[in-house]
Length: 314
Image (tube, rainbow, N blue to C red):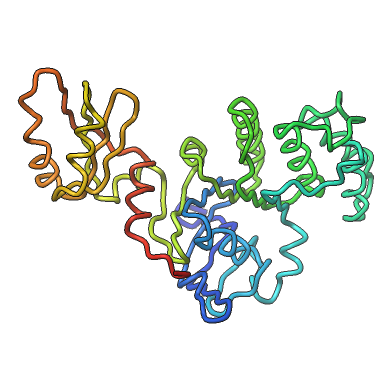
């Protein structure tokens, strides 16, 4: 068989035209997404913008009012029960029994799944997430980072093919966040597909691809580099003294969509490069200031998209 005859691998998720309404509000509006197997796919967007609802629609946890597609090769409408058995779901709120130990919590979860050889699975999960030495510690005594590890251990006990993470590192210190993401990449390298919602830009940059969802509408989709490039945004860096005063004077000028101070630098962004440069022209001759063009950051793009979106719950 020639290379041209080899069939493309089935995507982990392939959905089209998803719509979900709650009462008179359309929470997800005509969303189409494809996620490859083993991919870490990030969801970004304002609070209350439909990220969690979209994730639940993608994997059959909610039934769409319109739209169709597959998750793990199964129809999201007709085979939702089978999909759920292959999904690990880590919610933002810690939801384990605080008066049970780490090992007791995992053993309880294994019993709920009716897993065969559950002692081996619990032991392997404890070792994988670095919890073995703490196995007898009560869950209620754990810090945020260790609670996060326990939650992830419970999610992978039944060896799911798809992992859903809803803002999994909120309130966790930077070292614990990095260790968590290192483990997520190891799991993805073993073929696990991961959907993760996050507000941290450094976490979004660790995803293979991202989607920006605002109030039910998919506004951007692709690699971080592609999303930044497609934003049409231009950014100028202003370095020097008196930046807060300059920022105040730039606010609202034609061509200036966003102004933000980052320490000793000012980020000034807009979609019209000529108008942006014209707005900055009064400061270009000052010897104590440096004005240079730079690539917009993902945070610049995030704010830009947020400013363009409309809150459908207003």
